[in-house]
Image (cartoon, rainbow over all chains, first blue to last red; front, side, top):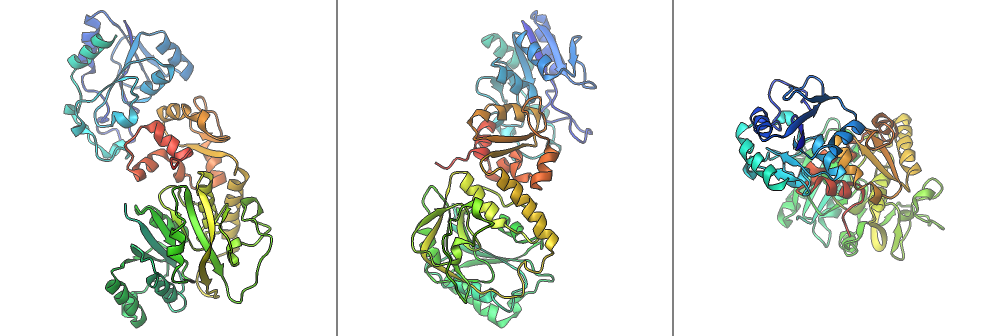
Length: 151
Length: 324
């Protein structure tokens, strides 16, 4: 399958610490996806960490829509990409950590939250006010299992 | 939810009408659940040291009326009303510090507080009294008529906006905090915003509040420039009174989610960060027209509402309302 990934949340005003939304195991997940024969395309902006050879940078909305509609599915952290794909009616996987999928997710997608125990108490405060928690994310194997079961 | 908070914002009336206003609140046949006095005096005084106020505080304690004296930031009474508005009560009764409601006013006003009502006011009579005629209470007539509440009210009437002292459904709309310290038209903007959400604004009979007009205190000493500034903002809102003003000062993803409810809005006029997603004027345009735009910040609103639902429904609540 052709899979678009939106791996990184928009950078915070202070970049001294990792963004609490950013999935820490993208390299492992991408390796597994590629081993299964999937084509992985990264969408993002310039200066973000590149994870795959095919990195589409700074696409405008029209180009992003074209990329998504020409793909089979997508995997994203809780960021713009999940909303855009939802708007297009293209189902995908969202990897949540501390933001609540009941608020920020869409039921049409597969929203993967490890545990509600990791949700931050102040859901609407700036992300600069939250700490990164590596353990708050599901594992790459769990993502692969969801992908295999649904697509 | 706690039922009713009474708020009095005061400035320059320690020794004149404020104690009369407090006394009138204390003597209501329907006891308030809490009274908060927002003190905008500069410098403020500790009124516990004043015998007359000691009596009032003692009576409230004996009657079981919870009370609080807040030294406010002197930003204008609209900031104080907004604090009251956000305290988690279902209703707020705002009483001006130069007003003295009759003892049954609160009981009467609350008797009209049905599920589709956003505000209820009675007569605000200033002695010596002279009657009015032909008053509509409509927002478009505000510059060419006196306020309906400045006369005896003989029957329940639905109007567009309330004045001076009234009860209102709290936590639905915000006071416009971009107004100057004069806070000219603050209650008009606030109550009309509830009206725009579809709530009824009522004036009702047998609820008389006496307005003890005096030269000292209040906002009458503020500069003309402040009144002009506030009138400019008011007129900008009034010019869009038949529209739904939308200000999307938020992220790209939020714009996409908002777009999904756009068709549900009545005559939207939009200001947007990402016009390629949701076309509209700029955020700076919105600030120039309306001043402070915090009332449209979806994240601040969700935090204020302790929101648990979807972002999509939060936008519905902000721009359509969720009352009926």
